[in-house]
Amino acid sequence: MASTAARPPLPPRAPIVPPEDLESFQQHLNKSTRILALLGAGLSASSGLPTFRGAGGLWRTHEATQLATPEAFGRDPGLVWQFYSYRRHKALQAKPNPAHYALAELARKKDGFMTLSQNVDGLSPRAGHPASQLKLLHGSLFDVKCSDFFCKYTESANYTDPIVPALEIPTDESDPTTISALEARAELDISDENVALPELRISDLPRCPLCKKGLLRPGVVWFGEMLPTGVINDIEKWMSDSAKIDLIMVIGTSARVYPAAGYVDSARAKGARVAVVNMDRNDAPARGLYNGDWFFEGDAAKIVPEILKSVIGEITEMPDAAVEA
Ligand code: BV8
Image (cartoon, rainbow, N blue to C red; front, top):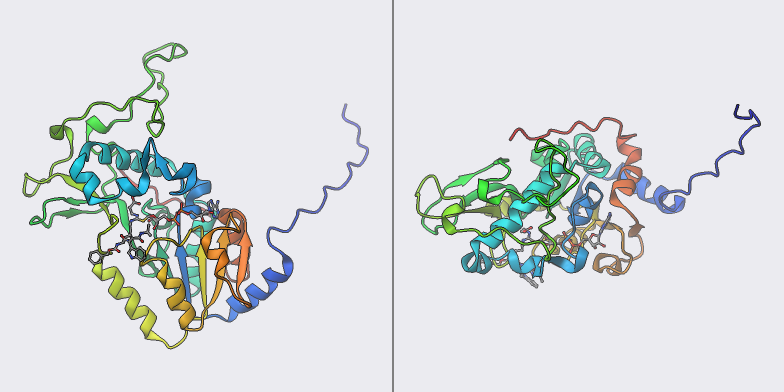
């Protein structure tokens, strides 16, 4: 029987963020009324979604930024759809993490808080982030639209996975461990270039139900494309509504893509102090900090709930507004 001798007390948990930084940040946060956040792929990293720069920014042998272009879609719409169908699948399997919920709760507690997300994974909306305080700068994986210039067909909240049967993620037929056909065969990791991609014909790809001519394309903003005008105008209006912005939090982003990255300087120009949350002290945003700014190094999923605690308390509930396919 286990001895009842008293076990030595556990060593105190190392503070997630330096206490003095936490204190000065929360003092400023508590009295801040106009707050911005700029979100990037690092926010969803601990939900299991790859970042753009992670894995060298490659999907198979392709630069992710190269696949996210109208030119790539023009050249090989099948490959681009396999890229996006894979990301839709992974995003649907993923769950929002405590940072997504903490930001949603801050929005409920501070109506002067506006979130600008570069993420297209749908996790902030699934964490219940109030839509009026969340601007999706680069669209969503779950919106689709017609790729024909003259057809204005758009469809939002399309969670059909795969969107067409031909984009089903292949499974490992050779897996001897599967004793019965019923047992789920392991999905092949098609982000690995050593895994063969199924052949696709144009006729296999999603077609526009309105013009019946154009292919449907993901409702995301590709490089070289304008951001949604409505989103840009809403942000301009929010920025010009008041003379001052108190704080901008730059969370899990390398802040290299424009115009999104430009909002950090725009907020600074309106008096905002900057708080960067990033795993990597050497990445861009951390380098542009001044006295009075903060850099919190580590996993956003741990740090964001901690630094917002003075306003939002403990994040206990994590209801997932899971999507009905
Ligand atoms: C346009 C949707 C013009 C698609 C995306 C000015 C200067 C230079 C270039 C330009 C400029 N203005 C415009 C350009 C061109 C271009 C651009 O910015 N290029 C860059 C590469 C230099 N911009 C455009 O093309 C934009 N359009 O300008 O149109 C125009 C004007 C008039 C008329 C016609 C056209 C459109 C840009 C939008 C492109 N679409 N996404 C899709 O997702 O497939 S961009 C995409 O990449 C993301 O949305 C995001 O914006 C970016 C990736 O950045 P991050 O999210 O930050 O991810 P990254 O992996 O880089 O970094 C992750 C970070 O997290 C790292 O710092 C890491 O350390 C950290 N991290 C990792 N794990 C964690 C963590 N942090 C905390 N916790 C962790 N656990």
